[in-house]
Image (tube, rainbow, N blue to C red; front, side, top):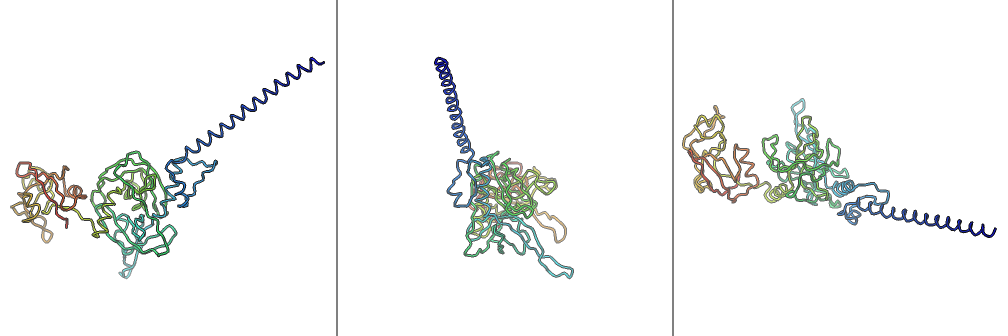
Length: 403
């Protein structure tokens, strides 16, 4: 009996040792598993997310163990929370006539804009406020204020508005980014008021850069940002943002066969807007350079009539004596030609130079001319190529201010 008892004791001891070892092994697995979970959870949060700034800006992101936000989702939440109050809804009134031919206010269009200064300056598109007799700015809290136009730049479809907020209201100002270093594939977000649904967030990527896009006024806007971010009617004038919440573009138009988002939207680069806004605030308009000469667009019909060597470019009709163009030896025509009928007719001169290139860019028509000089200032010097007779001649010309 004593021998059996010792064996039994030995067996029980071995079983107990195995049980305790197993318990320790599983406890170790559980501990390591918790550690790994915390590390993975930390990796899902953006590295550049400033939690202190989030708290100050009342950004409600749950960072507990139950949070299921991915890095992209957390960034979207941050961008929206920190930026949406700087986006305004813009509505307009236009003047119409009633059955008695009396002028009456009529509801106009709507769009979006961004607050760019605490004094109440708002950046938007020109077409958002086109033909408006009254303009209204609505803030995130529903308050509405009448706004005035500070200045417009139809060539880039940009406008600056001004409203007077109450002194007890502190406006949220949008942050300006840099559009010079954008990359195709970069993630971007848009906040706007599509179909009147205020402060709607959409996201996508930069799908192309430096697109020259012709708007409905036959004006070519250079260097547009193409994006697949959903942009619908009402988004116009609102900001295109990077993942830090900085404005890198102004949403302007879509390419669509149905009138709604078709996966291709276009935004004016913010660096263009910076230049435009600076001029508008200083001069009330954008100051641009120009060739101070009377120019006529060459067509196939004109080329055939005047026996021109090319059927494209700009024919120099007249050059003012003493002008920068005259100093650069640009030459006008010497044979008068009448175009049009009756009071709609005009006279220009053939036999002068034909401008075919400016600053290294081919000039096919007057639209190309305005596009090339869009970002040029008076006093800047440009190289131009002209056809004179049958020769191609290089000239260097100082630009004058465009009227």
